[in-house]
Image 1 (cartoon, rainbow, N blue to C red):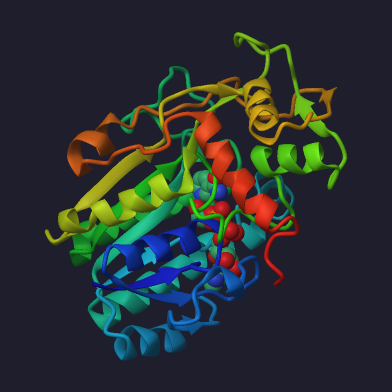
Image 2 (cartoon, rainbow, N blue to C red; image 1 turned 45 degrees about the horizontal axis):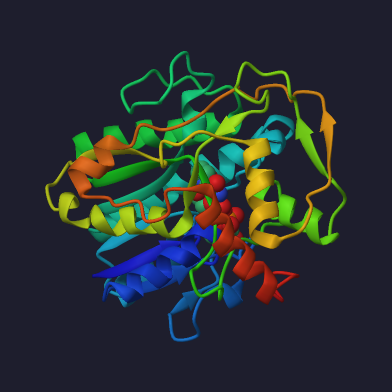
Length: 329
Ligand SMILES: NC(=O)c1ccc[n+]([C@@H]2O[C@H](COP(=O)([O-])OP(=O)(O)OC[C@H]3O[C@@H](n4cnc5c(N)ncnc54)[C@H](O)[C@@H]3O)[C@@H](O)[C@H]2O)c1
């Protein structure tokens, strides 16, 4: 299938591009490179440096490349920044996505896979999180993703759009061969920060709160390997053939892992010590967030190939050892 990967130069998108190639599909990347890296995508993959909200240019690409399905990874995704600059988030995550969808509808492209987030659930009352639980985001980032989910539902009913919205938990790890991996700027994710703290590339890690009602007092999160995420995106293709299909899936391993457990895994894999300081809790950090992803496993046959934090960290370390400064650009 010819697939337009919007945000395909970013962390998760670039891994998905490789999985699409491996599965025999034809990915085409659209990315304006505000965060992504050209070098994360193989030279032979058609690449368009375009803003996803540019309907004229996106329309041309959809037609020229005979696109049948669009995967949409592009977004601003910094929770704190979304609070201080919500305008940026509503424009890039919601308004631009509406342009993309209008352009798709106008071009007759009616299959869509969307990167949503567990942040749409807000501060949940119960764990693990099931897809049917209430969604009440507590920051503009989560709200913009929920706004898109809601627009998708309406578009499916009205225009026959078929979509899957995947609510990711904490994407982590890197390609098994270490050729591509995580390189955000700024980096806010725990595993790359812990690795950099261990190697001395960054200052000691900040551990925000050790008095949560969790076994070791630090927050519990659900780390899911980026290639496992990518495989779910491809597994859903067969379910998007029915016009108006509206699918929602949590993607996480279901295993809660504490901040201290991640530190221990990084130390085990690297053989280095992760220096860290205890800092106060951050506002809006729930004590625990982990998925029930039985629905994706049962309905899509989604197999989690990296169920434990050590195997995930091992791939991140392999990428880091080969590229200590990340991508050149
Ligand atoms: N990384 C995670 O743990 C995580 C968790 C939950 C949800 N998500 C969601 O998954 C998606 C991918 O996350 P990621 O970590 O790969 O992010 P990323 O920043 O690495 O990748 C996003 C890509 O989108 C591109 N982009 C952004 N705005 C664009 C625009 N207007 N036009 C064209 N390209 C644009 C960026 O240049 C970048 O290459 C995001 O939508 C994010 O909200 C990520």
